[in-house]
Image 1 (cartoon, helix red, strand yellow):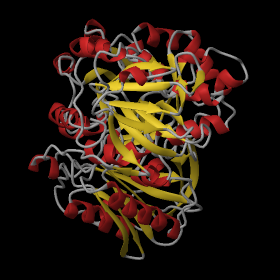
Image 2 (cartoon, one colour):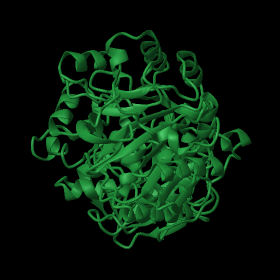
Image 3 (cartoon, helix red, strand yellow):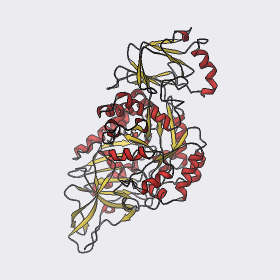
Image 4 (cartoon, helix red, strand yellow):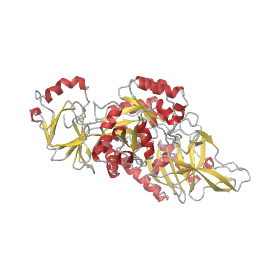
Length: 603
């Protein structure tokens, strides 16, 4: 049982008699690992020379000598003095951000030692509704590693400020709580609604708590006073939106798990982990996660092993960092007795590595099965078979013309003061900026690093286009970049310096059924096809990553200098993170949660 096809785990209660028999020496183990150094995240120590026995996909014995569990047919693995540690857990993430389906995402991260993921498929919920969530949930359950699904809470993320393809109701949430792979409620982004006592938001949280499951949090506000307390009182149990030490401290003090994220573009571990490394706060209340990682990061840099390495580089003790990526996560979701540590009864998810700081992942087992070796996934990751409806999600009323991107100036104006979305490198929040922009023949033009941004409605073929301005990408010359990945409503976002290229980019994505395209001087120089809901590809991760790398290179060729600027691009419509965003209804001031004019009023 240690190698081959994926092993679907049985309940502990059902296999307990066999585990007892193995642990006591009355029955042989399936697998014994000897000669290693076991990382015990329960006690935060390394047990040199201790041995591990596995049976029925679970740990049966942990101790100085597993010889009594060895019998005919037992596979024996010599760890050769290397460390054996629990499989890594990602406490908060969106599979869709990897541009991959659950199967291909699993195939990409298994070689990096990730054996458990807590995923929120709210991206596809905005495009396909409950049916999209069900497809993600069902494919997740087919995988050789543990992928738990959090039922999306907010589609739309901010009612009244955006229009989604589908909406999620409190009834949908209550229904999904009975699905076998649902672990809780996805991040409650509508924190103003919770604070104001919105009946739907509170009903969703209540349905989750009545089911005995965890409510995910998302409090993207600097206000840590009364509003924060009101949000916590609603039931949110964790939060990954902190960006400063004070955020981590405030969450831990109020009984909330602080999730420190390192994604492709979110670098929020270093600024918060000092709450543990310098202030000495109890590390049990801190969890590591990725939130959003695109395929290039997964293939070339890693997944949760990358986050753990980064936390260690930021001064965290390696054993503490490993706790934050294993048992802390499992405990938070009520699964401490099921996974997250090498201890009797838990799922036999483990990693073999020669170094606890650099974490080279040499072998990975999940449920007692060898799933990766020397950087290769060695088991199948089954696909569900995505329906045609999922592959036809880009709906335009008609091909878009350059005129759709003309921003009319107030009558008689030669220059205008426009509100500008300011991108902040390596962070999700934006800045609300202003800029004096020139007017040519009655049309406002970008200038001095200020580009045009437009949101093109793509769910109901309304023909709607909302225009605005953005700065921070550094684009030069004639170019455009368009994407059907536009968190969270996932209309189409296009940023450019040329209205002609912007139109060509939008129409190209309609032609291929979604994805990301970059144009320069009237020619397409990069394309990542994402035919499933305009968000994902079921092609192998390496292929998608190669196209994503070419896309990043194309952005650089257009003058972009930001780290992982694609992630910044894809969040420009995220109307629940301050300060300024764009939606299909207009420009959104997220500090006030209201629509705002593009131009500043003259005084």
